[in-house]
Image 1: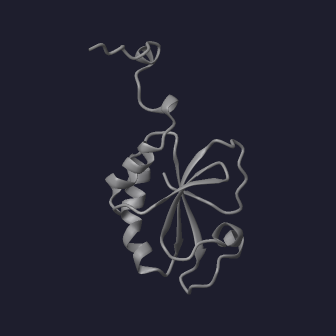
Image 2 (image 1 turned 90 degrees about the vertical axis):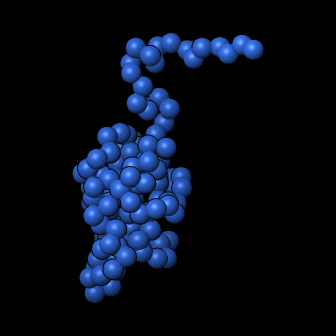
Length: 128
């Protein structure tokens, strides 16, 4: 599920958000939309997919997002945040699978998909 983003307040300072900053009139953003929506629907993990509309279909700035969009130079721009701190800008392939892989690669180790019983055991020691 893609969550829209207006004025943001972070209740969890370590929450991970993968944000797409877009302009509604941008053809590149429109091309990305199906892959972004599919990725956000298919991904099951701690990273939240969010969309931030920076400009409307007539390229007018969206006032409620002006502070969030102040550093965005082009559309679409995709960035990962931990709370209010920018972690990384996404420059990869614009396929659903690549977007999901990016989110999975940034899950905290404690939240990655590890069966609960296995998480209790330390990794085996390798001897040569």
